[in-house]
Length: 102
Image 1 (cartoon, rainbow, N blue to C red):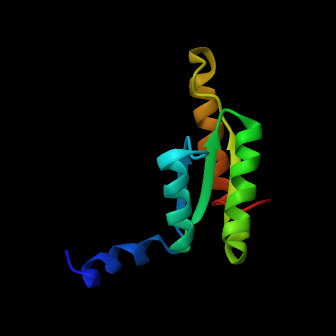
Image 2 (image 1 turned 90 degrees about the vertical axis):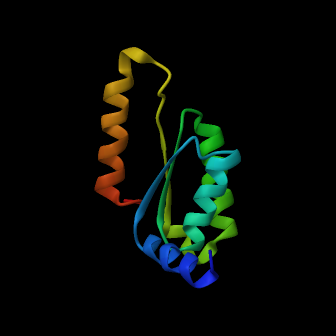
């Protein structure tokens, strides 16, 4: 694939909302950073608040000009009894804020 055909897709991320589940480490963290590099709003979701706080801080430090485009939400998807409600809350928060802090 040529670089010109690749860049036509990357520009499609500009001002779009990218929700990254499990984005506090590994591939999810890389996806969050890449989306920010291409000017998307990024919402990182994790079940661990301390890891989420650290990730948001790291992304904002790494991309200071895009710090307002990063937000995070704690969402535990491991508990079956609350799974549906947690997903609904996460999606509502993601669509209400479009990735921006209130």
